[in-house]
Amino acid sequence: MDLLTADEMREMDRQTIESFGLPARILMENAGRGATRVLMARFPDLSRYSVGVVAGRGNNGGDGFVVARYLFQHHIDVKVYLLTESAKLQGHAAENFHLLGELGVPLVELPDEESFNRHRAEMAHRRIWVDAILGTGLSSEVKGYYRTVIEFINSANRPVLAVDIPSGLHADTGQPCGVCVAATMTATFAFPKIGHIQLPGAEYVGDLHVIDIGIPPYIAQQTAPRQHLLQHEDIRRMIAPRPADMHKGGAGHLLIVAGAPGKTGAAAMSAMSAMRAGAGLVTLGIPESLNAVLEPQVLEPMTIGLSETPAGCLSDKAADAILELLSDKRCLAVGPGIGTEPATARLVHRLIQESLVPVVVDADGLNNLAGEPDILTNTHSPVILTPHPGEMARMIGETPKAVQADRIGCARRFAESYNVHLVLKGARTVIAQPDGHIYINPTGNAGMASGGMGDVLTGLISGFISQGHTPETAAQLGVFLHGAAADELSLSMGPFGYTASDVMRQIPMTIKNFMAGDFYSEAGLQRIPKQELP
Image 1 (cartoon, rainbow, N blue to C red):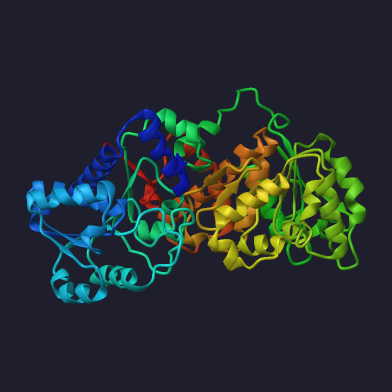
Image 2 (image 1 turned 180 degrees about the horizontal axis):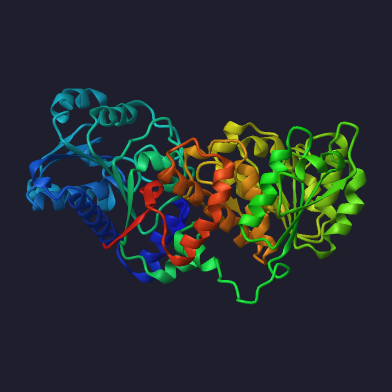
């Protein structure tokens, strides 16, 4: 499913109006009518309640006027609260406001905080609110009067239908602009926007409904959005049944370079997770002194001891041996529990630059790139990076807070600049491709905030690559199934307390469910868009 930026949505609207010839007035009518249907479907007994429509001066307010008109014509007790003077309304918003007057819809103009305060007690008795204050074009912090109104709506603790997007939510980042309406449901138009899906935006959106307002499919294709939401069917199509004569060599051979004293578990889980993903053979390259420790931990993967530093971490002297080992491998994974000694960093740099097979880099492999991302500009094969926000911040010299404030922009800029595939982990993991396309993952839950989850993901992605998947599909498969397995565990075991090893063991069953089309209960996906008729 495509996700739009505010600019992309405006361009679609423009082309629909100018080149296709569908008047903007019709688009607004379709939007308001569709939003009304969402509200009435949610509350079949809506005639028992009083509804307040809070409208701003722009087109979002115009959509709200259409909602009010349809509610009034369905004999709903509705009143419009306009947060400006009606004389300042323009275009189709003004036209639809005029129709309210013609019909006798109750309305009041509240152009300032003083007038709002006079009506505040009366407004508090409204049972349901329609938020049509600010649309998708907002980019600055909400202050002053509008902030007061939004805080009033939130404090009323009533059901809220947000028209297009909750007022105060940034459409492109999902970040609240100072303050944001906490909606029960949101009716957005044509396509969901990034801010509807990314956290924390999804928590303000509530249940998301996408309204068809009449934009022709060919115009959507011409606009070519570069943001996409991964869905169950996307993943199901990527998982092909194996031929009956499949053998372990045909399922691919993966080399994982990992481990250091005190971090053998990271190496073991990565290796075992790759096998759970279906890799035919896995070789685990580790410091030679740890071979006796790791061999009992991993039964199916093979181990090989490599040159190490006096502290027991992998040394750059192991580089030639590792590169030789890659001659019959399909993928190299580097980093889980590997440490950050200078010799280890030199090893990581050389492997990334000289590997002739795709390289998945995680954990300390990423930390060894901190301050030296230009290493990535001189490579022979695709590179897949899987940082969490802290690792991402170290690589680009920023703070985790800055990374989280613009997850998509941060991931996209890095992927394009360094021609890498970047998996920015966290709630709603972002997968950025070198061509700038973004995939957002909806699976996973807060129970995954537990050590070792990243090691499992490294094994999954590299395991899928070793089976012949491209870096693009391997990243999408790994991330989605990783979260889906955790969602299944949250339903069977509880919301937290399961471990990374539990997720690893769940992966084959999750793959089976997807191949059969037997998806888990969408407990974690209740806010993913529902398509609606206009």
